[in-house]
Amino acid sequence: MLNLITNQQMRMADAYTCENLKIPSVDLMEKAAIAFIKAFISYCNPEREVYIIVGKGNNGGDGLAIARLLHQTGFKNIKVYILEKFNSESNDFVINYERLKQTEVPILHCTALNDLPPTFDVAIDAILGSGFNRELDLFFTSIFKHINTNSNFIVSVDVPSGCNVDSFNYNSYNGIRAQLTISFQRPKFFFTLPESQMVTEDFEVVDIGLSQEYIQSITSEYLWVDKEAAKSLLPRRKKFTHKGTYGHVLVCAGSPHMRGASLLCAKAVLKTGAGLITLLTNSDFFPFANVLAPELMTKNINQFKDINLEKFSSIAIGPGLGTDEKAKELVHYFLRQNTPLVLDADALNVLQLEDFPKNPHESLIITPHVNEFDRLFGQHESWYERLQTAKMSAEKLKIIIVLKNQYTYICTPNGKVFINSTGNPAMAQGGMGDALTGCIAALLARGLNPQEAAILGCFIHGYTGDKLAQHYEVVSPSLLIDNLPKSLLDISKVE
Image (cartoon, rainbow, N blue to C red; front, side, top):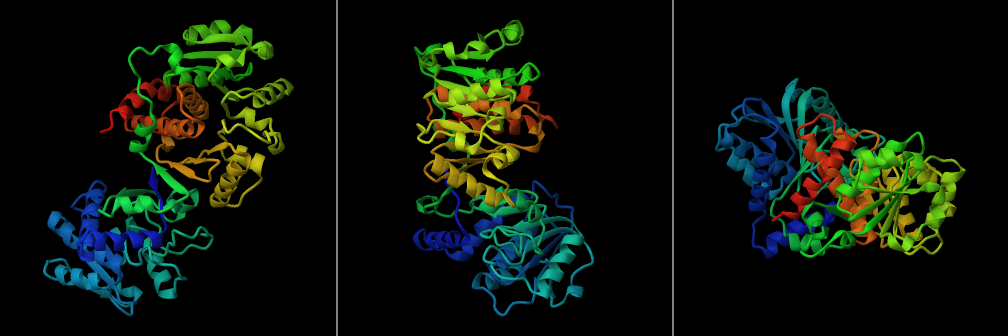
């Protein structure tokens, strides 16, 4: 897992890297510019007109280095605008200014709004950088408004100018509104919140050579889950194992009007590698379930109290279950048992906050979307506020809360928040949550603890969707479920 750190901690990492790895700061800036360009050229061809607007701090120095290196790469239509609203220049800005003067790239100086061109094809924003933490004055707000209004494509260097990524109140934001931010070394935590869309529509992270060991040594409550982390959690299949080795999942889902949800969940359990799956449903649905997924075993939902739960490794309950009295009885019954449990959808809709066990055995996972979460925990004004409630509630209740989002948050009893890096808008269809529930329940059955199962289940689910979105504009839950085994194999082969 990668620690996500604050701006101040990132500056400390810069200083540590320069001092302990003996890298001059201007050379580190060069590495950052090279990494930026490698990402940038996949979004922009060399024929486009590129306007690089810079301040006079280190973010501006990055911009000057980017201009020089873009020119060397083959971009010929480049102009640099230096904003003269600064009392001083950083040393590395001065060095890169002198280097840029040795090229044919035009350098223009801007003391007023009228000094900027009327329109921009591609605008690279390297004005204020991540160190900004104050109110914008009229000069900057007018400059930023002009760039925002008159640019075809805005790319920010590390952070959009005017954005303080360690603050989460953006009700009156008037900084740069980028289409893309190419961020250095680590994702900014703020970019995982939906509120960040007013600041940057998308972001990409590039490695600029800071000391990973130092960054990982910094205490952080937010951790980024990447492919390497997923591989470290995925258990390898070994010789002489059998179906019993990989656990038995009980899926309690699907009312007469929502039978598909139960099958989506159960098939996700199957495709994520559980050894045995039993679907708890009405007996009249048995023939259909056996035809659509012959691997499933079935039990009559009306006899749920007669089931020997000791034979099951985990239970998934909720998708399409309904909210009648029978559903309430089922959920409350399983909530009192000791078998690891994943609650989703209607299993959450029939509960009140006071229904959660007072002394749980820390193997309860709930997977709410925003409306389900707010119904249980109260309305929230922002996603940051909602996440803080989820974090505190996971600690207080000793449960895992999987708060579903573009970047899903896995909140744990120890106060950590694991942020899933996978998933995309092509997956926005009913039934995706049913599939996720099945993924997590299967991983519980395969022997992962609740925290590991939630983290890996979210990653595999989103990773599969990301792979499919390279070929499909819409990714259905059924298509995703069928491709889960490919994702498991792919992740297991990470070097």
